[in-house]
Image (cartoon, rainbow, N blue to C red; front, side, top):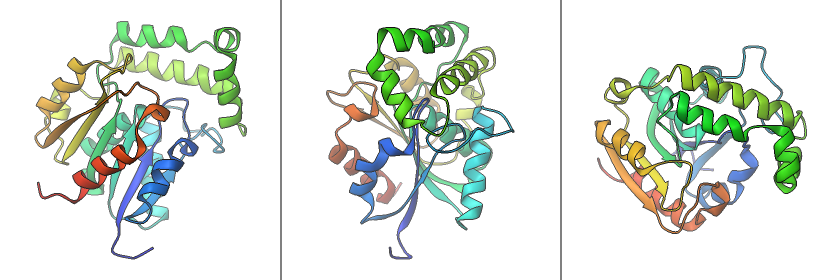
Length: 235
């Protein structure tokens, strides 16, 4: 690793873990100082006594940066990780370089949250999609995956009642941002992504072709290309 490499931090989505980023991390490692962080309760990281929320996850990013002596980082946030990245850019602008989000849901209200929460039932997951239950069990082997699911449902329900980022917040984000969405994403709408894109002072919008919501569906070389292009171009 060269000391002049740009630091980039990957933030995973709900029910996710850093292991999902390995192909992308391998692709970008020659060009960046790559950092991977599991939020508490995810992967092999135990639950935090501080809680299970966007604010707690954001604080964990700041603690990680301090432990690694990183004055600032670029962030690639997938899904919920993108929301955490935006929260950090809004409240800790001096710490955040450029922000890239993929498949991040921005429009949280009781209706959108309720729709997501219905799917976050560990009994139904085990019954209807046992293969996904197995993935979650392996991904969160150090924790109880069912608890991760239930805590995630609670987090989303709270977001539905009290969205942490409103239009006025996005308007004050100084970091250059690139919002990416797959053209086949059935969880995140073009409308909510475009609304945030238009509100951000410095933003680009990228549509990933033939791409559904799961990170594993993304074209890794194409994703790496867009990340490199955005983090190195003059804005």
